[in-house]
Length: 236
Image 1 (spheres, rainbow, N blue to C red):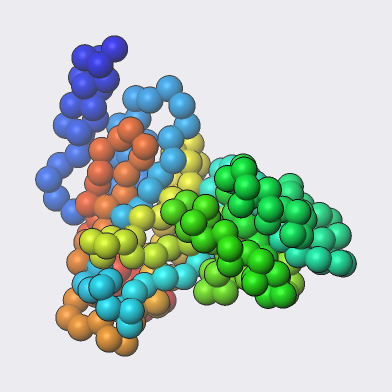
Image 2: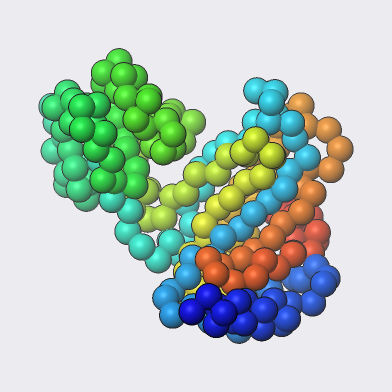
């Protein structure tokens, strides 16, 4: 099985020339190179000219993909009173107050993709840092997961809201859809992410901000994108 996978990977990589591609050219090539038997996720990786060791050069934000991710995220909401009913009506799978906080804290329960909390509950939620932090699930005002309007926050996540942030090596990894999506939908999702990251450029960042962009699928090869993609995003 390993040998067959290696042969498939080698064949897929052979389809990609060692040159930058336009986004509209890279997406169909990625689909052509597909060999996995499942519907792979398409990821965008951006290498930025920032130093993430400095707080004023961290790049972080959220963006709603126009065509979603191809899957519905499971959302949990920690709130109280009417906000619990609002969250449930908006489609949240799990809602609760201190009882939900206790479940997460004592059981290490994280059977959800996103957690939203109202500001008044953050004192209790703050105790969950050790459980939620390593999984990237801690509610944060910057990502819209600490919100008074919980219904709107739930609907945004369900519609395909994704978070982006630089890692220790100044890379940003963001999913932009499924390989089965039509080319134009993947291109539009990817451009939406690129534009959002470009607009989030910190004022402290010097020199070339976007140093490289690669698009890939779960099992497929990485395809380097032309620098013109970032330039077009900067002008939009």
